[in-house]
Amino acid sequence: MPIYEFVCRACRRKLSFLVRDITAPFALRCSFCGNTELSRVISRFACHKSLSTVWDESGEPTMHPGEDYYRDPRNIGRWVEKKFRNMGQELPSGVQEKIQAARDGVLPEPLKDLESASPTAAYD
Ligand SMILES: [Zn+2]
Image (cartoon, rainbow, N blue to C red):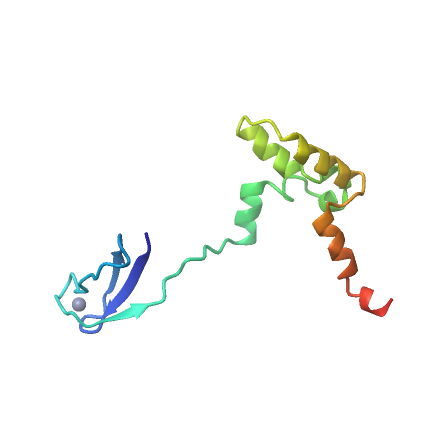
């Protein structure tokens, strides 16, 4: 259910309306002053995280200070394995095979396309 945000043109307060049925007309009225002239506000729907928040949540790379974590192919897929383990789920065999192949230097098909898209590829 979308939430629409408006600003009251009279008192400038911000109002949020949860719209249960987008096809049904809904009355817009300021809940503070009763004014019916409201201006639509573009809602924020993206959640921006700081790099340190991302690191706090994933544990990388601060979990391994001083190591060249991302350059070590043995670490490919570690985060996925950890998440499945934390959820008490067994990693699907297809995923495990792809991770092992990547650790062995064989990239999954969609990533192989990236090789041809490298900056130097155009000059070959
Ligand atoms: Zn108002």
